[in-house]
Image 1 (tube, rainbow, N blue to C red):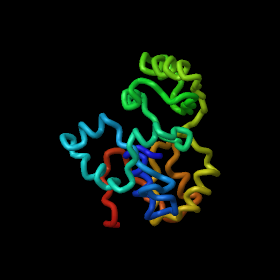
Image 2: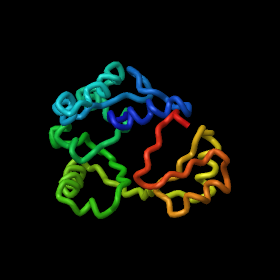
Image 3: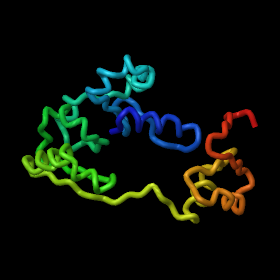
Length: 177
């Protein structure tokens, strides 16, 4: 189960790679948190929320059979569960460990303990080895590669012919090159 943000990323990637798409009763369903339901229209995000209307799943459905679902959970969604997780809930945590010291995550850990649940700290990183970048780029075969968030953007040119180097703050328009 995906949140709206994740569903939108999956939707955008569908043009490049084959991924299960959000659909009613499908492998990927979309849960819209209460906070987003209240803020979508004023913030201009309602079109994105509406895009997944047919794939939406409600909290009531999740709570009826929680063992059937794996969902992306954000600390702001605790209230959606009426401050009580289903019995035996497992939470895989993959953000910076320092956030676990914040009061909202302490509360979540306490709520998990109350239902014999557990928080598992699973390390993830936004960093990738160069050979994995090369393999990934080859797998998706993009028209243009623009290296960002790297100290060595020119190294991309050693592996790929379709690299465009731009400077911070420089404008680049998709489809104009």
